[in-house]
Length: 200
Image 1 (tube, one colour):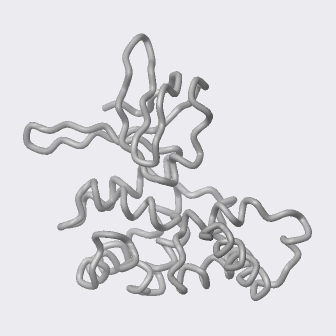
Image 2: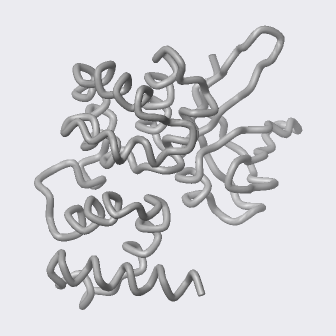
C-alpha cells in the first residue's frame, strides 16, 4: 500500500495530478478540493494516496489531507458508491458540509452531488450515521467542526440554496478582515453578489 507520494508536481487539472518522484511520473486522480490546494506546477508537493483495483484496472487516487482519503475509503465501502462517485462527493461538498448533512439527515445537500440520487443519499445517511465520529477524528478543528460561527452558518445556507461548495470555499478564502466581521446574513449576501459577478 502506498501511503503518500512526495515529488515535483509536473501537471495538474481539476481531476488529475502528475507527480514525478525518482524518475517516475505518477498519474493521480484527485477531487477538486485537492486541486485547489496544489502548489504551482514545478513545485514540490506531497499527497496521500489510495489504490483502487477493479478487475484488470488499477487506479491511484490522491488527496491533500488524510481526512479526504479517509472519507474516500469509507465511501467506497458503501454499496453502489464507487471511486468515481466518491470523488464527486469530495469535489462538491466540503468534509464539514458532508458530516453536517449526515448528522442532520439533509438529503437535499447530498442529492446536489452529481451521481447521487435520493435513494443513494438515504443509503449514505444510514451507512454513515454511526461512522461520522470516526471520520471526525481525521478532521482538523480548523476545518470548522466546532460550534457554527457566521462563516459556517453562511456556508451551510449557501449550500442549501444550491451553490457549489468549492465556489463558496473559494470566495470565503478571499474575504478580508472587515468582511469577516459581518453577520451571517450579510456574509451570505456578499458571497452571492461575488458569485454572480464571477458568473458574468
